[in-house]
View 1: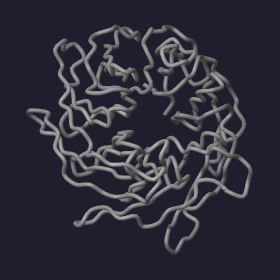
View 2: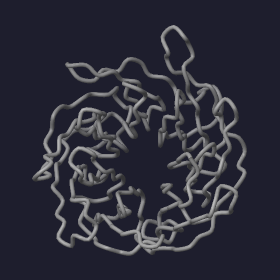
View 3: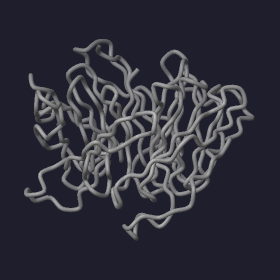
View 4: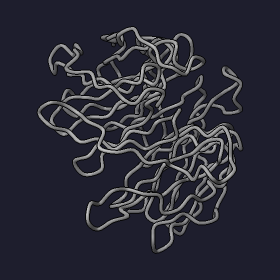
Length: 338
């Protein structure tokens, strides 16, 4: 499928970034060039999610806001602003079970639920604070840090806590939108759980701090780590590596590696057990790959520190190549197609 609209958000001068807010691109066809048709000014809109007829962004500021826009004739129209339920919201998703928006507030260490109706001026966040805790990486894990949320196939949500090496299962009441804890699951000490993805029935979780992709299975007794694999070759130079986003495409897994400025591709390395292993680690086309998304056979990488969205073609094996296009805009953080 080839998209005709692209939304890119980024960090703004509020946090030292160079972006303006949310840029809307469109094109007539796959053979046409992207053109910027609108720039919506917003403070640090670091993550985006689409719902029917609307786009929502977290404003990753000390105040913490959810910014909602309706989509009219291809343009964004500001609709409402709501408190996110804590400082520095860094992720937002739409919960298919409750129909609500759910937000991870990084600095506050909270999970919050809001109605998804963009025109509701009185939306109130139902907030759930993550339990107190810490991890062994003292400069990053002194307290809870909610980072990412993903729905489960059975109607709950998982919330990663980078600060305490845990993730939580949460249920949202579809009527009251009140969240409640279902279970807590421990991850390896110092892993710094960041982003989730589903790989069939297995759960993938990137360790921002330990540089490993953790593969988990689920049973009646909860989640268990089956195995973990280094997401880059530690024998190759490239210090200060921090894993970021993870996406599954068919049998392949793609992981962003900031610091090394690469995209790692993992896939089954054995027909016998299907365990994932590194197939390739390639340049991301810029600096600090924070987020990325696929459109047809192209990978669009938001390279925050090089002020570019790099467009990488995939070869027959699914490995990204050198950029075929660089879209220049300040401090990009999130890429969403429509």
